[in-house]
Length: 190
Image (cartoon, rainbow, N blue to C red; front, side):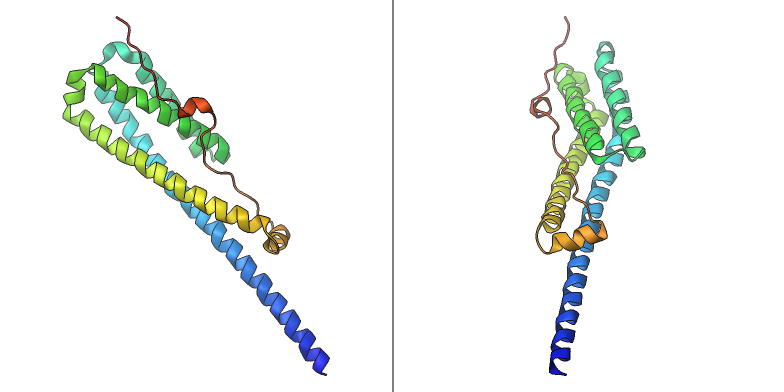
């Protein structure tokens, strides 16, 4: 009879361990999804600010239409990928391209003192800069949660439970290539 109670205790402990590991995986998965949602909110805010910024710049930099068109095109590509729930890697690539392209609008302001002094432009630039900072913070938060989830999925014994219940590793939100790490170069025709 004593053997039965020992075996029962072992089985109960194993079940409790499985439940604890499973719950830990669920918590990390939910935190990762919440972190992605935080990025999502900031990206939507950025999408809304860009057309206003471009319209403000248009009045001052009429012969820089190519730059403005490029910003809108990249914004639309990023927004479409975002709205269609494209794979996270594709969304990250498009968002990184958009961030890089937005730098060119701010570089335009340096060549147009009237634009730089425009109150609307200054407010939009501040709002967009604030949004970019929030996106960066959200990315760091997301990547931290992805790191924790992936670590839990890869380590024993949680990797056994993760495999049984279909938990999968997530991708980090990172720069796709070296070009995206470089400063934007803007040149103006004479």
